[in-house]
Length: 443
Image (cartoon, rainbow, N blue to C red; front, side, top):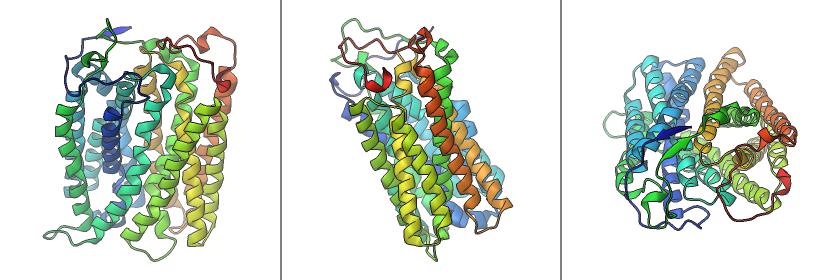
């Protein structure tokens, strides 16, 4: 175990009731930051409709630029988490937002593929620790019997950012920009401003932890300890591989979906943005409904296996259709299945974590997901460049394959978790004193 220094004293909000499922006064603002980070990360997929030509980028070079962000993600996650634990939320979040907001703004002024790659790496490093850091932060205010909630709530921000950001990005590219700015440059500038402003506001808003609010439990330690032995747990790495597949599929769809939609007909960026939002609206519905149903039923594994399989089939159907309406329906089913699988996922590894293994384990899993984001756009760019320019069958097959892989890995986790060995429960959460019946899916 590695102790860290005590966090700063009271700062930000007043008392936060510890019996709330997720303290909404904390969760909603963190969703806003997750939304903006996702928007600043994926708006490049809309910029590509015109930026690629302006900069002379090939599909493979764009794929590298889209995916190389996750090099920064991989390098930045553990350092960012440890920094959060040392300096506190009210300092850490403005720092991260300032760096990634500045990079998002600078994207408007890139002149070469090298500058494009460099900014994407720094952007990834600044955003890399955001998701595991927020999960760790919110879980400290949440009873362990409801620990899945802090994981699911920030995840809603990713599809929400595409629902809001898709039409917004398309519209900003179509409107007349000030001066001689191109539409894609104007888009980058406008969408970076909220991140910079909210980053400043975060300094005054967030408490650093439960110890700094009036409702903290008496005698609660301010020291943060990390138990790194969780990295030797086999189920952790099965969960990491599963998350890799789910995010590889998601990022593959995220970065290439606007270009797939553009092939349905002669439509401009605004229309592409509106159509692009429909599958992600379905993903939000699937994410929420499936996670709630999983909690109520207590079953965990089939809530990931079935929707990921459905998403894989829907991806192939969308690639085979030449009809815009039929293709959009298939893409909505794809989004529904993918969101449902992601929404139910975190209930699986949540049983691996206690207060000392949560940060380490969640970050390891998130690093694996970031690796999926690194590999998939580059692989898809290579596939597109090696196949017919109008073909989407190659990318569809690749995305479907990783989603089928997610279903297979979930089956492997299910088999492994049922072995009656002590290693499968050595780090289960024990910090919730309330008695409860074990869910059926974990018996």
